[in-house]
Image 1 (tube, rainbow, N blue to C red):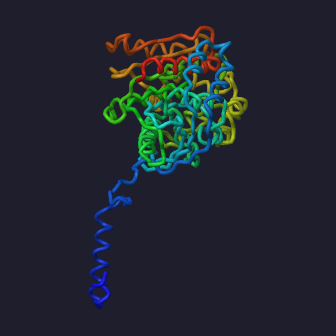
Image 2 (tube, one colour; image 1 turned 90 degrees about the vertical axis):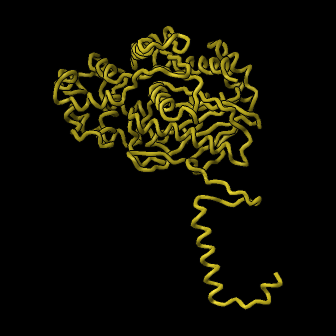
Image 3 (spheres, one colour; image 1 turned 135 degrees about the vertical axis):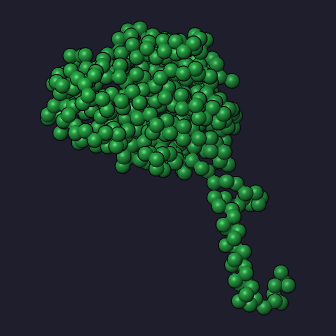
Length: 419
């Protein structure tokens, strides 16, 4: 220090020092310096996280215990609740139509310094912007899944593109590529969050996936993407798919053969979101009768719930859909592009490296049980053994009443096979 006090710093020296500083900044992009002088890379996916909720283990046991008399599967989950849970809202980088987009979701962590597996949970159909996980974390069904972290899991809830941080976009409903990225990038963001110094819970290397309805489809699609592109970085041990519409052509054919369909938003949501996504440019009145064709843009602006959307449509298929749509859907040239989009966004069987359980309510009229049966048989036809693939019927339950039994059975299954 004494040396520099005695030296006169001229203009040449100042310029030289400035150049050195600029070069040092250019050769260490995306890094931050720790006090130990170790250079640590900035997260690639995770952008921000904030704790928003906490649950004590006794609260979880009490709340889940309410279901013990109706659902015996709740008993072992109550008994296995050993941890309190912290719920975080996160934002992370994902992709939409080839461009980077800020996405969001929830991460639930056990209140412990131990190591745990990750569960990626994918929710069902939602049209309400304020109804996604990060905007409505105290929703009854989201809360039940959050409680499951008390059984010793790190649980991620991707909002999907079109909700939360990306609410300016209409959610691309049943669009595989965007959904796959939202799911895998959420898991990658969770990995990065678990590496933060102020996060106590650790990751034990195991991944599980689970989802219901649209989430069942998103879960199976996400698994196929992971096993194709992320097998070494996101190794999945087991996957639980509940009541998903995996074959969208078969699903659409089912709807068109019904006189009355209880959830008429399915086709309008898919067709309109694919139009805004840029996958087709056909006018809505090519598919839908008035006044419904003109109503659809407003109904899917994110301010209406599923029930409110359904109430403004019509559950009588011949009233909602154009007659030539019904008669020409299967082979008419006018609907070839729609058929192509449905096929493109369906999930086809492959030879998986992880276990997959399909669950379906036997009385489901919204998504027929045949969807799970077709998918299960497709895997068997690929030569996949029953040691990898199981089809489990939930007797006497419909689309709504199957949700809780599916969730409880899924966690009990994961508890049996995790480390």
